[in-house]
Length: 153
Image 1: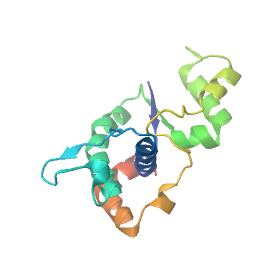
Image 2 (image 1 turned 135 degrees about the vertical axis):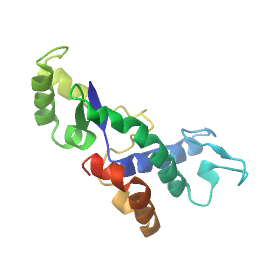
Image 3 (image 1 turned 180 degrees about the vertical axis):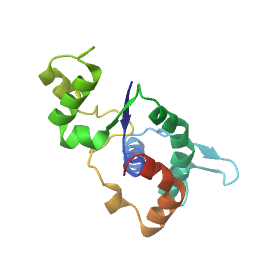
């Protein structure tokens, strides 16, 4: 099992920016636009949608971390695929023993993210650093700190 992981903070930025694009395109229900009955507001119309996405991520990620406990799972960092594609694909082919692998050039070409993926936008690792406010940084470290560390970020 290949477990493609990405810094949760960058996923949050991509989700937020994709939602804003969808609103501009006329879509009123982008990914994660949950309704908060207490606030009588949808997530992306709240006072601080990025903070809400951080809270949401803090409930999602723990459900996925169990994959890291198995020796039949190879974590693959998104950033490694983006910034060191050939080396990362070579490591994957070796780990898989070539099983189910296409030729190297096809795998490298297919490693590019698909623009319609709601957790991908620009694919710039570390983009959260220019998007998060100091409040978001503190909140993400409080709620996602253990997850971020476990993922190796």
